[in-house]
Image (cartoon, rainbow, N blue to C red; front, side):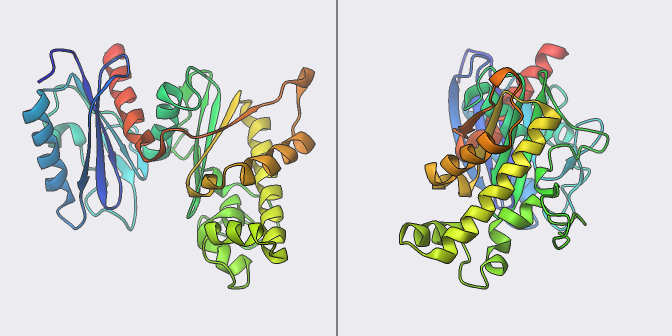
Length: 298
């Protein structure tokens, strides 16, 4: 049991819960991963938190990251259709018997907060996060505030348009960035030749001309999308994460080249591109940071 004050940061996914126990200075006391598949995920979450309490004691606060749109009071997820039955409207503070209200964040927004607290954008106040994987997600901080918006939709950067004549995505956006980059659409974009970006990158390394053509188009669309976001939100740093970022310089080198071509740079000031550093634990760390911030504002 720790004598120092600490918080729990919880990141709920479709099949597992990631939990971080951290002190105000960012020292991690524990990490836990718990499988939460099935309709009884709520009971599994409660049992996992009870086990952490038994091991470490009562946290000063708890923060939560979860998929979907948080409610206006930030105590639950208001909208997450088709996944995790029972998540919508589930009051985490009441369910977990927390001392204080439990702030609930969208998982991408929590990941951004984690990267700003302990990762690639440490200490920055104007940051965009893009996660490139099966789909394209994201979040933004402007002047020290995580953008949430009227319905908590802020940061859904996968659903900006990069091709107004392109097909419509699941969110009714024509030619979206998600359609242009997401793994889920790669088979269609490659005529069935590739189903995963890792295969595409490997084919490029082997000199496959089609793979190179597809990648160049993806980087142009990504560069255009990032440039548009820069013009709207004026970040100091753009953090790129997700599975596609595993391509490393194969992604960052052409993306930097596109920004050299597209980006508006008053007085020569260029936005810094950074690869996300916290991996799968960014959301849990962001939730822990959110818990700490809720204490300081209460």
